[in-house]
Image (cartoon, rainbow, N blue to C red; front, side):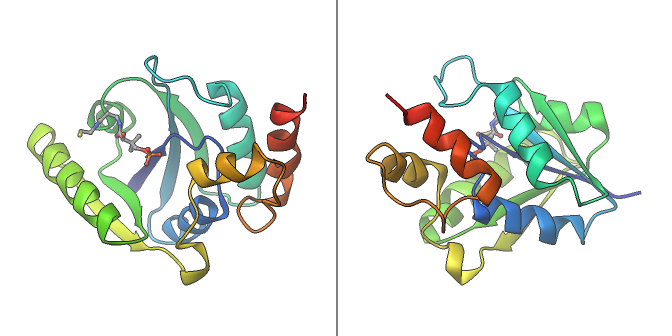
Length: 159
Ligand code: PNS
């Protein structure tokens, strides 16, 4: 059984993330979407909230499960038996940093392979950072996040 891991901050999950999740779930037998719990960062949403959001937007995809981890991606991959790391690529800047991460991950854990999925063209400008940048000023984020997530974001910025 081929198990994949798609790790990220997902603060919040975007339509771009969801597209990668759907496509990756068709490549591997089991896909673990793993929220990075980074004690050095102050995310908009707690780890539990981000897991809940991911569960909500992936509930129809049978071979996807949601988890969270601290520390190194490869250590968590080992723990859950994942041998494929999924990453989305939007542009050459993503490629430069993602390629380095792939090399480091392979040094740390030789059994891990990274599969890069090119983002769909309608998601090229999407990022969780851009979602927050627009939402903080009350802008429309309909084209950026799954509809279930819109209200959660709006609630965070309510005065
Ligand atoms: O949502 P992001 O910021 O694109 O996710 C990045 C993530 C979580 C995949 C990456 O930062 C990560 O794997 N962090 C855990 C620490 C680690 O294993 N780093 C890889 C070696 S550079």
